[in-house]
Image (tube, rainbow, N blue to C red; front, top):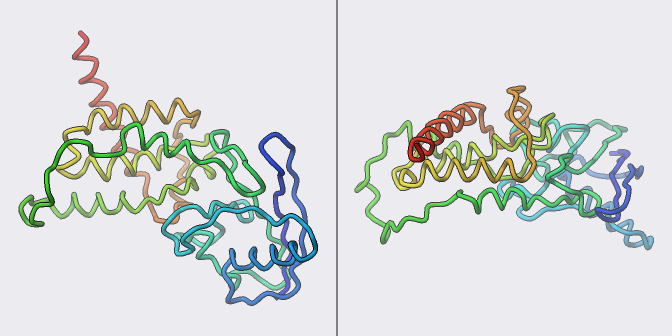
Length: 252
């Protein structure tokens, strides 16, 4: 299978980047996308060139580090698929594939296709946790949780924090990510105690990092590899409004 790759090359955050073309004359359709990049890097190293820097870890679609924009779409054209789980059989012989990093101000490029996504970590540090003492693990049925609530919490917890929602949004909004993290804790009894504090602090941290606001274009939902829906943003907005009213009432 013959392909042509147009890859964003950038030495560091201080230098200008550019798309560089690399012909790939013979790859198997059964290769994953990242395996193809590995093959390219082996060839570059053999010829004394600098290999293409890109992030990856699990290569099983669960860690969220394979942050690539492939032909203008985060993670590529396959719905509910991470870049590491995308295979070359979904492309055609002779295709020209453009590969770029996430494009968002809060995600500065470190090198080539690698961006700094620690802004998401700082949002989690602001409130994406349960800090109240819950004691030792109790028997599973000791604390009944309605199935609709547990199902919703599991759906939200599926977010892998890859940042594709930010890369796809014209406003570079992180609201889908934040909404998923707020919801999966706030829907469960253990997370109720800090529910108001959590949403206020995480939204504040999101704004401080420079992420934009949501204008409901749905681009985030369309590219989310785990199928997180806009419903969670609506839920977070309601929670945020209630928490803000309570906070203001305390100061009046």
